[in-house]
Image (cartoon, rainbow, N blue to C red; front, side):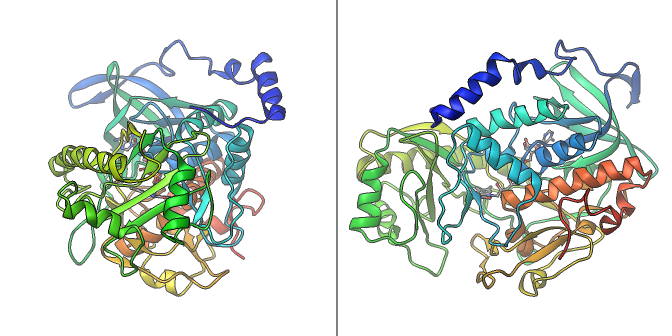
Length: 491
Ligand SMILES: Cc1cc2nc3c(=O)[nH]c(=O)nc-3n(C[C@H](O)[C@H](O)[C@H](O)COP(=O)(O)OP(=O)(O)OC[C@H]3O[C@@H](n4cnc5c(N)ncnc54)[C@H](O)[C@@H]3O)c2cc1C
């Protein structure tokens, strides 16, 4: 990995390292002792209580990291439970680079501002300064992993890595514990408030919250993608061929902020469609391999790109375990064919190689809760406003294969209400990220990372405020929280 680090930033970072700012902040219990003592009855057994905390966040993706950091900043003892060994979710493990722009003016909440600042500190040139660009922040997965750990250390947020949610224990409408599978077997975690940022709403669903998955009309989830990285690429040569010689105007920016794409299920015909279709004709690619192809440069990793493909056929479902697993195998074969095809035929890829497969399949949509407010497509077109709004966004509806909407006019946006994060069934639960209460089509707009982060940030603030004021999470009125505490105040 090579981050571009300016001399000034290098000196700052070196100073931080020598004064031990980063490493000396490791939490006190780094030797692996349980944070709590005692046991918890579960299915006729007594499980060790591993952790007792104010706020437990399940899932450390864009929404989960933001939720945990804002809860920590607001003085709460906070724990993230994460099944991988990095935070960032799809951003890092799914190779989903970059963060798309919200297209909404002034949508950056303080977590997003902090993230940008930290990316800059690590020499990541996140901004392409082109207002036509669909990219909000250019990121780099290794930098994000490091930054998210650093944010947790700075804000006294603890993380349980390699730990998988298994079950909930409830008393009436309150979740008292979750059961998790750790490297040392099953353990219990107690918390006052739980925030489900799993992307799959697994905690909410297990606790009995109603949910749905897939498109209401077909039952199909959005297609999954199995993303991968390629290295050894001469990106300037690719730019010269695709943008200059072929005249592709898809990407308004130049390397190192560069992307190219084709999408056969869209009405727009992309210049690179012919390149992919030629591969079908020659027998090197299948129809499915050529359905959707997109590639993004990775800032800080010269000669490397993140491929936003292959897009798996719809028969591989993000909400059926066996189908999901078969999708992994099919996707791996697709990666092999696509990478070989690029190496043979795309100028600039002559010395390229498959550098990394994602360690998390890219599920755009799986399950969504049915909460107190259910966002629908009309909320996008009507630019809905809510007094309990926690975020604004205007990313277009991008339901691959089903619907791609027009963009909203410049400056327009819709808001996301706190009520779409809470449920009538469970008092001490907030849900954030791509699995909030929204229809399939609306979710295809709100699911972008920056919006998920802003929703997560609000969830953490609300959870902390509720505990301080003894108000259950599911009856908090966001607009009653003092404006100076809120991450977002509706105009
Ligand atoms: C292929 C693809 C391309 C995309 N392209 C873009 C793009 O270009 N730009 C953009 O902004 N957005 C893009 N998105 C959307 C965006 O990446 C996601 O919507 C966003 O990451 C969702 O964030 P989240 O926090 O809700 O969930 P996730 O990122 O899915 O994170 C969920 C976290 O929960 C953890 N978890 C889940 N279950 C458990 C469990 N049982 N126990 C413990 N931990 C668990 C996971 O390991 C993960 O870390 C794309 C998505 C996909 C799939």
